Image (tube, rainbow, N blue to C red; front, side):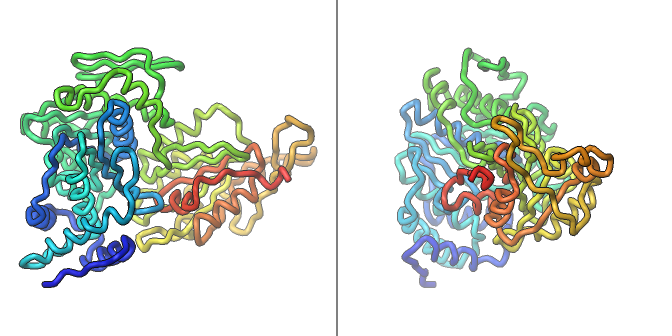
Length: 477
C-alpha cells in the first residue's frame, strides 16, 4: 500500500486522528511491530518515568540537571499545553514542527510496509518522536509514560533506569480501580537487573513485589534515599552520596521535593553512565521550568495555573494554595475537566478554598460539559448560592493600603445574620471556553484577589495559548 505524505505537522496530526477507531488502545504488539520495521533503537541511556502525578516535573528536573552537567538530553513528554511540538525537546529546546515531518513520514511508510498496522494517535506520534530522538545524538533520553506503563507505547524502549512517581487512582477504565492494580501496570516499565527509583513515599505493594520478582535494583524512598529540610534549604542522602544546603527547586509546591529526591536517586543509580556534579544538581534544580505546575504569575490579581486533574494532584494544589502565605479576599477558580474524572473528592478537597467558580467547556469531545461540572459541584457544596443569585461586586479599598472587601460588607447592615449568610455563599457560572471564563473572573476580581485556573491540560492550555497572561484588575483603572 502506498504511503501518504503531508507537508505540515497539522496535516499529519489530523491523519493520525483518523487512522484508528479508538482514541486509546493499550497494547504493545502493533507499536512494536512498526518499531521493528523502523529498526528503532535508542543508542544512549534511557530514563523512563511513570506515575499518576509528578511525571512531567520529574522529567523537567532530570533534563535541567543533565543540561547543567554538560549533556545533550532529549525529552518526550505528553500531553502538551498549546502546541504539539512541546512534547519533544532536544538539548533543552522544543523541536521545530518541520523537524518532525520526516519521522511522521517514516512511521507511515513502516506501518504500511506489508500488512497495514493500525496505530492510535498516541502510538503513531510516540513512534515519530522516538525516531527523532534516536537520531539526535543524545547523551540521555528521558521518556514520560503516557498512560500506565506496562502497555504504554514508550515501553517498547528498555529503560536503563525507571522512575515511578506517585501512584493514585486515575484512568480507572484502562488501569484498574485501586492502587495495587494501577501500581502493577506502572511497574511494567522496570527491567531485570536495572535500577528502578520509587519516589512514592507509600507505594503500592504490587510495585515492590514486581521489582523483587524480576530482580530489579530497587531504590525505595525512605530506605535507599531520603531528604530533609528547613524553610531555607534541604538536603538529600542516597546509598553512597549526600547533598547538603540545596536550594529548593524552582518548581513550586511541597510535592516537588519528593520528585526532586527521586531525580537525585536516578542520577546516583546511573552514576556510571550519566555522572553529574553537585554543582549541576544545584544549578539545574534552581533553574528548572515547567509551565502549568503550580505556576504562580504575578499581577493584580495573582494568577495560579495548575494542570491538577485528579484527586491526588488536586489535593496537592489545595495544600499549595493554603501555604501561599498571603491573604486573598476572594479566590476565583476557572475549572474544566474530562468527563471520566472522579470529581467528588476533588471538589471536597479544594472547594473550601474557592469562593467563586467559573466552569468551562473544553474543545475536546471527551471533556465534561460546564453545566455538568456545575451541577455536580452544586450537589456537594452546602453554601452554593441559589441558581440565579448574583454575586456581590468587589470594590476598591476605602483608603490606600486597605484590603479589598466584598460590597456586602460595606455597611453595618452587612453585619446582620442574613447578610453574613449571603456573604458566605459561593457563586458559580458556566462558559463555553476557558478564555471567556478567565475574563469573567478577572472582571469580577479585586486587585488583591487570586484566580486559579486548573483541571485538564486543555483548560490551562487555552488560557496560555497566546502566552502567559499578566492580569491587571479593572478596578485599578
